[in-house]
Image 1 (cartoon, rainbow, N blue to C red):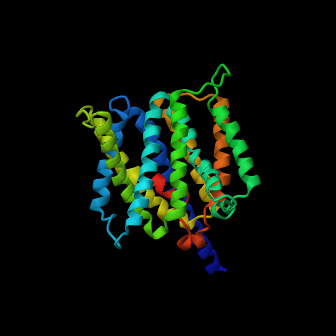
Image 2: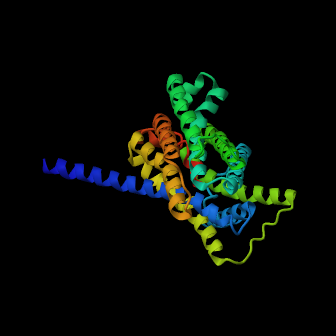
Image 3: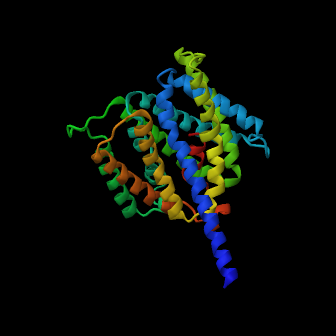
Length: 326
């Protein structure tokens, strides 16, 4: 009896540590939106994107994340397409935050996990039931929650429903992220996850440089204020690298529904942090819409994520690699 009690305590302790570590990862990811909003006051979107991922590239190259087995041309082609989808998503999101609030952006970009099964259905047809693990009725119910939740999040205080450019760009970003998630589920195995994540950081840097050359927009960020450089360095280290490592360590030790619930906290935390740090405001109706989106996120993720015992042979979670570059 004593041995069983000690074993049970160890299991509970391990699970609590895993929950704490996964929550810490989602908290770091949630901080990126208010951080971007602050940086946009002194830097351009391309400057933020370039220097964040240039520093992250130096980090992952220094850590040897691009080393390993010899890669084929198909691997590099897939990694490039993943990088392109991610670049489109983050470019749209960064420009979108310019014209909308970070709190609304937190909810709208979380639609990526919900767009994923819908895109899989369009691409794979009936095979999507097997690919995503979702039934049509369940998907329809979750999308009903999404439509109601999105409508409430974007409603104004005068009860009018107006979308600005930033709102549209954030939804476009979530679509690009969803394309990336479907491709990850199709192409990437757990053993390759770190290499693909590292390649995407390099790809983000190269694609941003290419876009800057096409548009003529300078990547030379101003030396001052110094806090902007410090914040970009933190974005390169924590959300792009450490949070991904925390996720990889924590999620295999958690039940699917519990992990999904922790993930659903990310957009809620992003909105709350934007309110606390930036002074933004959301009405009770908008918070209610955010809760509906969070509920749909829990439902979809819990059906698509593998159970811990199946982790070694399963695909990465639907958002693992996208969040590693978030």
